[in-house]
Every structure is written in C-alpha cells, then in structure tokens.
Image (tube, each protein chain N blue to C red):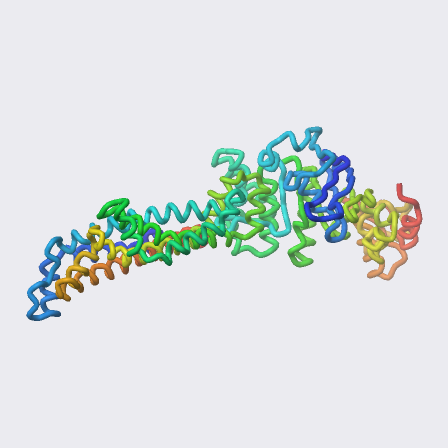
Length: 317
Length: 251
C-alpha cells in the first residue's frame, strides 16, 4: 500500500502550494486514478512517491516503509515508472531498454533476456520482431507498450504511471486500456495512475482521487464519483454525459431480472457485459428487453430499458 | 563483417599513404620532373617517411591532450556542480583558439625549452575548442525526456553519464575530434619553428633556402596525412552510426 499523509509542497519562487495537506491511500493490488486539471498537483504528487520531488512536509510510505529511508536511486529501481513521453533510450534496442532496471539490479544476462521476452509477450509485441528494433522504428502505440514493459521489468510491486497512454490515437488508447486491464488483473500491482481524462480514470481505476489546486476534492469508486460528485467542479469533470459513462462501469448483472420475459430467441447479451453494451443491443434490436446469457449460453434472466433505469434510480452503496 | 566494411577503404588509403611516403626515390623523380634543373629536391635531414613519424608524434600527443581536456571540461560544465563554470570555460577556450599558436610557441619556449614540448602545448590548447564545443552540444542535445527517464529508472548520475549521455552524444563528439585532429595536422607544421620537426621542417627549409621543391615535399606530405586521417575518422563515424543501426536491420 502507498500511504500519502498530510503531504505539502511549495515550489521555490511560487506563492501557492503545488500540493497542500494531501492524504490518501493506494491499497495493495489496486489502481488509484489521480485526476484533475493541468497544474492541480497530480504529477507532483506522483513524483514525490519516487522522490523525484521532495515534499516540504508530510510522509509517504510504501508498505509501511518511509520512502525517505532509501536512497532515491534504490527506491526508484523498485518502483515501475511509465510516462507520457515514454523516454526510451534512442541508442538502445527495445530489449536493452526493457532490460535497463534488471541491469541496474545486476541480474545476470540470461535472466534479463528471458524476462525481456516474457514482457514483450505480455504487452503484445512479438519478441522475434521487436526485440532488436530501435525507438525510431516504433509507432506511438508500440513505444508506449515498450514503456509499460520497461516499467514492469524488475517486477516491482508498485507502479507509477503519468498519463502513459495520452500521446496515442483514441483507437490505440482503447486497445492499450484493455490490455492494461488484462495485465493488471493478472499481476495485481499497486498502481498510482495520473490522468486528466475522466474516461480513462473510470476505465482503469478501482478508485478515483480528484484533485484541484493541490488539494483533494473527492475520492471514491469511479461510479460513485460520477453519480455523486461533491461539487460542480467534479461534476463538470465528469461531463454532461456522466450518466452515460456510468453505463460502462456497471455490469449487466446489476440490472438483471428473473424470470426472463424476453423469450430465448433473438439478440441477447452476455452476463459479463456492461450495461452500456446491453443498452446498445436493446437500441439496435428495437426491443424493450433482451435475454442475458451466461458463459455456457444458458439464459439466466433478462435486462430491459426499465430495469436499467431502475438500477440508476437505486442509491449506490 | 559489415562493421569492418566502412573502415576497409580508409585503412587501405592509410597504407597507400605510408607506401608512397616511404618511396624516397620516387619523390626525387616526381619533384625533379616538376622542377627541372633544380638540384635541391628533398629535405636533406630526414626522409619523407621519417617526417611522417615526427609529424604523427606531434599530432597524436597533442590531439590526445586536446580530446582529454575537451571531453573532461565538456562533461564538467554540463554537470550541476560545473554549471557555474560554463561561461568561464567557454571564454577561455575561445581565447585559446584565437590566440595565434606561433605566439604560444614563443611564449612557451622560455618555460619549456625548444622542441616537442612547447609545440605540443600550443597545439593541444589550440585543439581543445572543437572537442569541447561538440562535447557540450552533444550532451545538451540528449532529449530531456530521455534524461528524465534515466533518473526515474534509478540510474545514478555517473551511470546516466556513461550509459546514456556520452553514448548518445558520441557521434557529435567524434565530429569535433575529427575537426580538431585535421586542423592540428596543418597547424603542427608551425612546430618546426620551435625545432619540433615534422612537415614544417621541409616547408621552412624550402622557404629559407629558396628551394620550392622541398617546400612542396612538406606540403604534399601534410595534405596527404590530413586527407588520410579525415578518411579514417569518416570510417570510424560511419562504423559508430552503423553499429547503432546494425541490430535493427539484421532481421
């Protein structure tokens, strides 16, 4: 767990603190998305975790250990870090880039080579094709994947990600999001993720921390942040369509009712789908309700426009 | 194999240069043909090949000093601890290059005596600027996000310098070394004034004794050496560039 306690930071030559009395946790194995407008202090907060920036007051600890008890370089070798600009070393191959932290930790060559191949597979890049390429031969999306692989290289328990997917086109970003979720569900890292995009925060975060002017405004699950914004600022961050965003966060099972009244014929939706997918199928079919099928194809109930509206009317726990 | 490819032609050229320099009778014949009726065709105190070795000694020692000083100063002023000295070092080095080498010899002779040492000092001072300038611009040309990520991944400052900054700056630094050494080949001819030998000796001998053939001998040898070293550096630069690309194109 990353524990941030009463942390403040004022940069030299500025009046207003970049971060003021900030406290929140990133629970072990969870993704916390830190969101806010430019200059709200979210990147500063992240950079204080691996001591690229030192706080003026307050403490930051990882699994109970104060980050100031370690040398900055030692600390950083045990924290994965992926950033928007990627910062791949242009004079090294993809494999050398991924192997840099294991190299600093003095792993032997064969172990580094094995790990590099494993990670390229993990981020969906064929090692036979990509291991020996250079940065200038990669597309933006491929470079971001290499950046994520490099952050994961030494299998750090904690990952810091500063808008790592913001420099790629929307299609690639969606695919990278899906892959990140898949990787995270397998690896269960403790991730602090900085973004200014509510969609990204809602997609990837188990929890969202909203910041403004260096302070914490709200922290909660993505759906609750969208459903119950504490003020107009958070509401505006969710956008006018925040109810629609919520659709993709809730599983279809939350609007499921039995017995199935929609009949077993015609279009249906999988029980693992989101309400957004269910509503899309309902609208496309032009039907008031459709059956829901489980992994084996058996009908387990139905979902309707009314049941979705009902789900939204219920208060969230 | 392909790594050697870029060096094959320059090395052949260097060998050819030495073979030609060693062919003393041929020099006499050619210069005799250019200056018919001239009896003083070759520098009397040393063979062309001996002049090459003398000149190379001057150039290699002084260039090694220039490169060491230029690299060290360039690295120093681009560190946080040395940033304050950036302006001073740049000014001093500019001064080093604007100060005529002949004057440096003259001023150095009372301190260091005649011969190799004042010459090497003057040439080394004169050759620092291109190396220093390119070391600084090469290191400053390393992209900021690359430097950032080196720190973020946990490299110590010296690891960042050796593994990231210098390798990325290497092509630019090499270009500076190339300029420094090539200019040095021509400048080193002045060393003859201080009695350091080299190609300056026949050039001045020909001038003093009104024997143009001897001056031409020294000038041709100097020009040939400059071209040969330039080709060698070109080969090294292409090898460096090639090495960075080799892995990528191998598949």
